[in-house]
Amino acid sequence: MKSSFKIFSISGIPVELHISFLLLMVIIFALAFFGVFTYYVAFLIVLLFFTVVIHEFSHSYVAKRYGVPVERIILLPIGGVSAMGEIPKYPSQELKIAISGPLTNIVIAFLCLIGLLINGGIQSLSWTSFFISNTPTADLNLFLSNFLGINLVLGVFNLLPAFPMDGGRVLRAFLAERMSYVKATKTAASIGKQFAILLVILGIFFNFFLILIAIFIYIGAEQEYNAIMVSSALEGLFVKDIMTRNVDTLTPDIPVADALSTMFRQRHMGYPVMERNHIVGIITFEDISRIPEDNRNIQIKEIMSKNIISAAPNEPVFESFEKISRNNIGRLPVIENNELVGIISKTDVMKALKMLDAKSK
Ligand SMILES: [Zn+2]
Image (cartoon, rainbow, N blue to C red; front, side, top):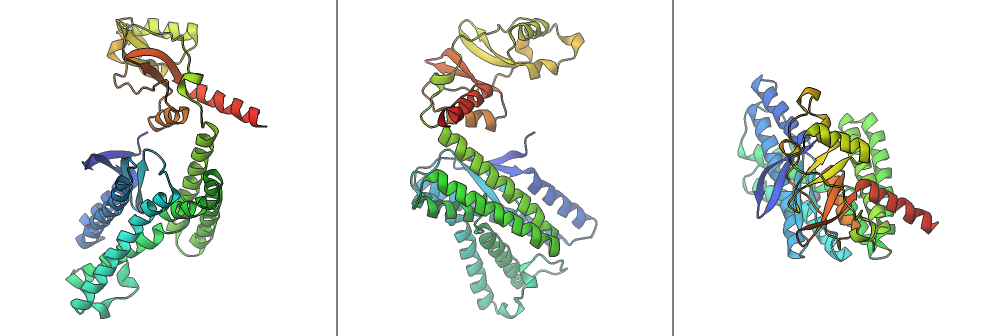
């Protein structure tokens, strides 16, 4: 299932809204509609949205300056995730990219503070004014203190030394200058997990919301750790080393029922669909199983996916593996000079990982 969807793109980077953020906005607006919250609170949620966008663009801006491509930005209520195409070359770059987001929030918070000072609203500043309060009337000082609060919370919170918070990346970059990247990630991830456990304990006593964040952090640390382990294990391995060369293919005009029996006979879960030596689509067992039995006389070109995500023979296996996982697909056709030269599947990568693991023991 897709957990986020594209809302717009700025300077070529697609910005995706995570479903949890959308739900939060819908709930707050619904509650405002029924009078549980004022519309000012709903406005603050929109403000949070813009603050997260600003936060993420700070990361992207710095990343772009270092030539690190940002593939997409996912907006979450507690910040966001900038999915970068590759790991920054130097730890010092990663550090600057990671810290730019929280730093921007802290600068905005500081500007709000100055605004409050100028507008004589500094007296109204209290701990409670940092948080979203259900007040019927809104004035500039209230707005400034709420905006200050949002930015301060986002800024400080993201500096927590736990993946996938920016602080986790800062910590890894700091460690990576002193040890190997893998070891630095390992250490940073385990610190992140310990942090998550601490948050659960705090959550039990203080605020249930912290437990949700802890789960998010734990999963993030685990993912980051796994990704780095896989990428370091697969280092130096290219698609051409492990791809299957003699690819079984299908033609677009055969009926779905025939494709299904071919699948059973040859035991492949997916096939490139070829027309006059050119790949025109991919058909998988999943695509076919969605078609009701009495409708399986239609041709496979009607149901195949035409959006072909492919790999190149000289591509590092890890990159292909990322494409496979990110798009939640089973296999990539390997294409060289417009010609199909092989196929690489998730199973191929898993097998390679197992063999590398056995070799290293
Ligand atoms: Zn960030």
